[in-house]
Length: 101
Image 1 (cartoon, helix red, strand yellow):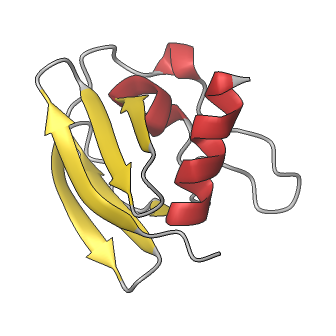
Image 2 (image 1 turned 30 degrees about the vertical axis):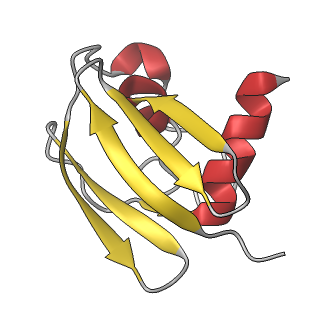
């Protein structure tokens, strides 16, 4: 099954909410989403060890911009200047599943 967002919205409480085509809705606190960045600056490419931990992120982190990447992902431009992470829709659905379990 293809994972497709219908709507992506930022809220005032520092949360990103996605309404999915399958009828589900997921919400992600900005600090959790920033900590989950999968880019090579945040995750070691060889060991997969996380280089950025949640406690290293300013709790007031904000999203400056969101860009759609093809038909499969978003790129988030963060207020801390970080902008290299590509969050696939599959990754985002997986993060939501992890937080609900």
